[in-house]
Image 1 (cartoon, rainbow, N blue to C red):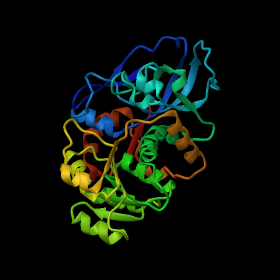
Image 2: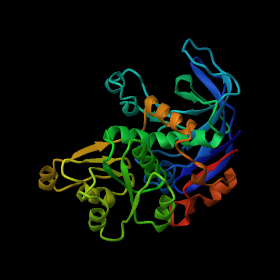
Image 3: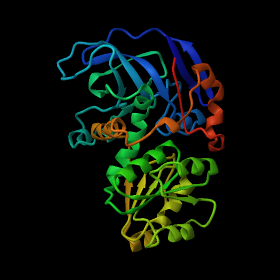
Image 4: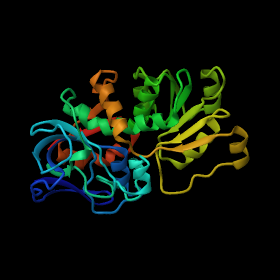
Amino acid sequence: MKTVLLREPGHFELIDTPLPPPPATDEVQLKVRRVGICGTDLHAFAGNQPFFSYPRILGHELALEVAAIGPTSLQHDLAVGDLCCVRPYLNCGVCDACRRGFTNACVKLQTLGVHCDGGMREVINLPIDKIHKSTVLSIDELALVEMFSIGAHAVRRANISAGEYVVVVGVGPIGLGVAQFAHLAGAHVIALDVSEQRLAFAKGQGAIEHLIDGKGDVLEQLKAAIPDGLPTVVFDATGNPTSMMKSFSYVAHGGRLVFVGLFQGDVTFHDPEFHRRELTILASRNATAQDFKVVMDALESKKIDVKPWITDSPSPEAMIRDFSTWLNPANGVVKAMFSF
């Protein structure tokens, strides 16, 4: 079967690999119908993704079709031919975090396409309890569920109240997803970025009420846009250390700062100012089954229109050829996805 392998930073290969064996107990075998490209893939290609080793088969934003179901005593409603997506966070189920419900932060977590091989291949075997089926969503929508779930989880972590002013720093796909679910939570959403192309795309999103040019005086722009001067919630979805550390200064007294993106290094801040404002810092990692349900319900009820998001649909060969250009936001790629 065709498989895309990231041999080392900056070097993809399209290779032929054996088909997987029949699904084992509690597994399902799936045809990969669509693969979305995410920020993790871009960071892995660039060589700066934390918790990563090479070579690796990338891919965890997947639309899948059930091909075979292994023996299982677990409850499920899957049948051959069903379309679905995967919750790609393979948790152990027995560690303290899992027992307390933090399956997304399992001590031994393995994420498809990051810690173990993912879905950039024609067929894959996966645990049956990680599969989410829909009889309504299109293949493209299913391939976007995981990405939106990252944003939905971050918004749930922030515990937004209706009417709050929220700033999303970095409106790539993850930031745009955060904006969508902050809007659905009743917030006034402001987008902040340094990319003219990303701000232009964000302008067309109904969830976003105001744009902030990160190359200008951010604090003055925020004070002009918000009646009380500063947002009570700031999401930083950049994974950029300079941006993440600047974000502390954007948060109102008593507000929350949620780091959705990450980088390899330390985040530092001025402690007296942090205490003076009594800020709350939250990390947001991955998503849970609850978040996947929220996202799928929102997509199935047409609360989110994903059609404008998919800007590139290359073949695997074209994906390999063009991938390096997607590292530059100026090229206008919002969401790329490919099929075998």
